[in-house]
View 1 (tube, rainbow, N blue to C red):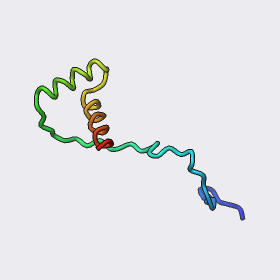
View 2: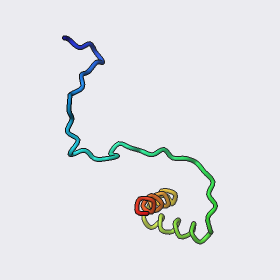
View 3: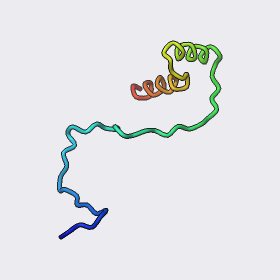
View 4: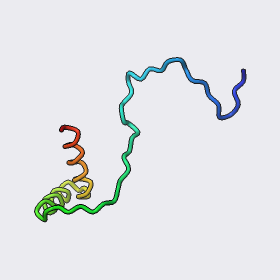
Length: 70
């Protein structure tokens, strides 16, 4: 049977043994207000400046690491 444009057939099995979990997952960013102590903000801004990253990105990385290990 000839397939028309846009149709496809699924295989009975697929090999995902070399797949990478979450490879194309990109979490959505949410704008929020957060109250943190001055010294914490200064610390992250200084560290972010040294690493040439936006401080919010650095804070997100640190929080993500914490959530994945606890």
